[in-house]
Image 1 (cartoon, rainbow, N blue to C red):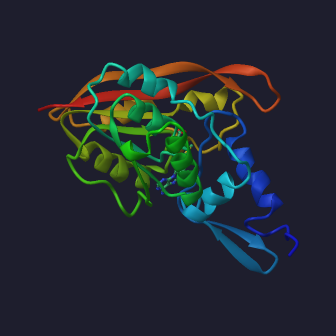
Image 2: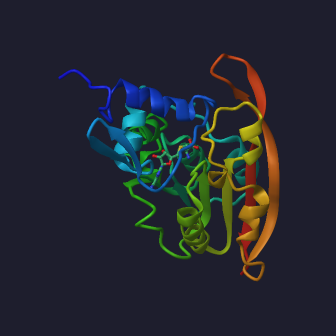
Length: 253
Ligand SMILES: C[S@@+](CC[C@H](N)C(=O)[O-])C[C@H]1O[C@@H](n2cnc3c(N)ncnc32)[C@H](O)[C@@H]1O
């Protein structure tokens, strides 16, 4: 059956999704959490941009979306940690999970997209690390992680609207065991003014101060709260400096 211009899985939808991530060939981002309703000639299509259907459609646009490498902030912040039990949320194609497992971590990796998880499973297998990584399809909005279970919780580029992000990130913090590490990394809001294509929705881009400020000082020691520069390749092939909002915190014992 030919694609119609309004088919949510057709070429138009593919271009729209690609535009959301095109500004950064290593990492993209998402948009509005509330269902996005657009007219389609008498009918409406409700689009939930944090759903399995949305992300599966995005992953299906190419055999590989991300680089396969671990995120720079994870390498910088987790290399010195003693391996234990890690949770990687919104794990995508598994670059971070494989890197952690290769360093001796037992990793629970969750994502809403079964397509992404299959790629993560394949990456773990290629690395000979399948036994160290448990992959689970989860919508984190409705199924947050278990409290106090992990020595490291890693959340990289899981952009959500504030009303969804704050309770989820609070649950991610709760999932860290006493003495454990919480690592939060997001595209920095200053990228919006740097010519890097991002959804023009500043509320999806809290900075490091906002992220760190949501952690109770009685329970958390914030070790890093930085806008960290990193080269970003634009769709025209040129490179600009983007920034990650990086927060690393240790849960007090
Ligand atoms: C920008 S990608 C980042 C992937 C990975 N963390 C990385 O850095 O390569 C965001 C990921 O979050 C996942 N995601 C989006 N909404 C989600 C939800 N409601 N629950 C769980 N994962 C979700 C997507 O499927 C996608 O793999």
